[in-house]
Image (cartoon, rainbow, N blue to C red):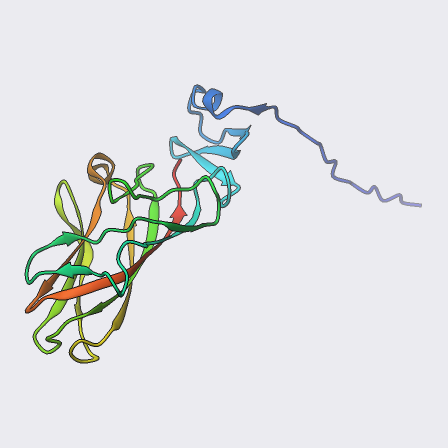
Length: 213
């Protein structure tokens, strides 16, 4: 009688010590290494540390913040003179956050906050505006830093509801952090062309979608 042998796989439990991120950053870079720290699980890929888990929430820098301005209202709007650029300020008097530790915009300097090279963000800029001359006037909105206008972060906005009529503008931009952004940060500029205009109820919704920290 022939006996059939059954081969079974054997599982092993391996538990790594939990080190600090400070200690992790002192390790030699070894491709394929895995390390568990208080911020998550890390591996070395292409010569750099990459976080495997968690990819969102506290400790990753990912999340979102809504900044609502209280300075400029319908009763006291921001006045734009023809062809005079100004910073689209937002005092962030009302903030709503996914994580209390996150900040992506500095209300004191009126600049976006960069963190780590190659991080990626999405920002939605919303405000109300009106002009006495809708046929001739438009708004230019753009991002500016020490190097000047940031490429692909600008838009021209027309008035379609007529003279002296409130119109809501809602625009979304993606931006990434390069060395120029780290060195100079960026603020948001606005300018009217063709006539004067007013702006109020300014809101920024900023989401950090990718982190290289």
